[in-house]
Length: 350
Length: 245
Image (cartoon, rainbow over all chains, first blue to last red; front, side, top):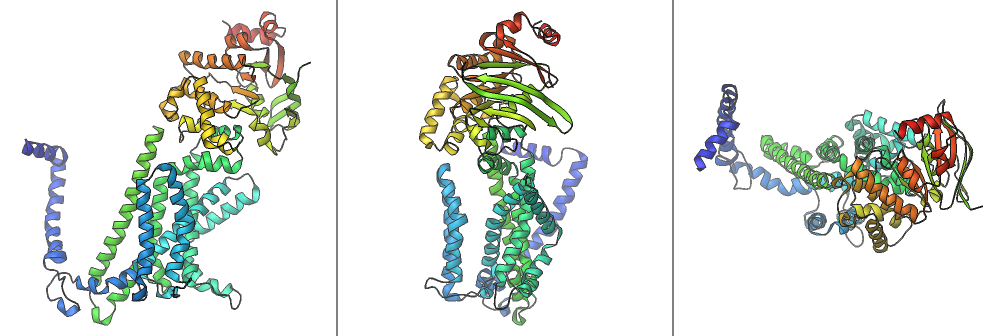
């Protein structure tokens, strides 16, 4: 019975015609050719134990490299004794997000409120210092934790700003409409690299003497503004998909502009464009390595640094593979989460 | 002379160069039921939508309950809060349950506590006979049920006036009846109603006066009985003979 099922499955999915059979065989052939070699390199011949490069004597991957550099890849040059501060911040973040899966819908608004308004302050104080905690300069931040900080900052900043810009672009007020339009088209029209360079190098030139804004903050704001233009266009797509009747119904019930938009229009528009928003957030997450250009080292930057360490030369493949897996893993989580949301909302409207 | 609740004084409206409403003059008294009919494109929807400022007029005065509907729509919310409106396409909010659809505006616009607003919503849903659907989403209801929910939603704001913009035109024949029944109940309860409709049976049953519009003008405005028994204008006669066939 079981074998019969498998046979059927194979027949339907892989060998339904001579043409498909040929394609299947070619794919399976190359898979068998490459995958065992990859496994040999990544697992069977790889070195996991040891503390230095000389421990890697086999022909496989040298995972010792990742192991030794692990803390640096995750935390950058953050002082070892203060690592708990980063860990605690991320623990709070993950805890609140997981909590949102278990509580009733009507309390979720408080979690959102906490994540957008309160958590950033807590995390900032924890990681940067203050209130009795030692100050740690942002140039010591780095690694995967910096990737997350930038992504999180980007999302909570770009999302509301993007929504306002999308509304602004459809506003009836001349100046607001054209300001939004210009703003969006300007930021969409320049490459992110330019934004990062400008924020890190050009911007300080225009600041008055003595005023100094932290480089990481400048870059983070630059990235967030850049992404907000994309969010704005995605949200605008959602706004345009709504029938005029929704606006009229809200107006006829006595709602003003803000109530109409926040209670009736935006909830529907945003639900309609969840895939586009997720897309933008994943792009934001994967764009963060660009900050390497101005000397800020997040995960990829740290790997670059590690592999050019004279003692560890020649281990780029392991490093990049590690980075790739990490980026893929978190992008995948984001994407699954958004699919979940889509499913949940689609059941509401039929 | 009873109290005027809606007043149109020489109202003109243009869409670009198109003259949509031409010198509209009429009053609606408190508690009165008015049915507006006329061929499509005659301006009846435009007229009713000017009452709560969904369309802006360019000339003349519209006064609702003593408040002027400003041509710039300044402070229009004050006027709108007192006017309920029911649309041809229902326009329920698809992301909210029927109950939330009804309780939304009372909670946020009238600042009634949520619990209380939901109680009020439930009462009105009972009145339109769909209280058992309260926790469903609009997409799960039939057209007739949706339109009744939309009526309940409008009533939850305790309006002084109800506007109906072709409320049964998007419905199948068997659903038209259930919606009209609710509207008749509402009329009996003394609500001031302005209804754009082709349902002449409904007009005969509840309307105090009927307005016939054509080409952006009010052609004839008469007590219901007189309107149907001896229309004066040729166009009215033609229209009635076509629609009552």
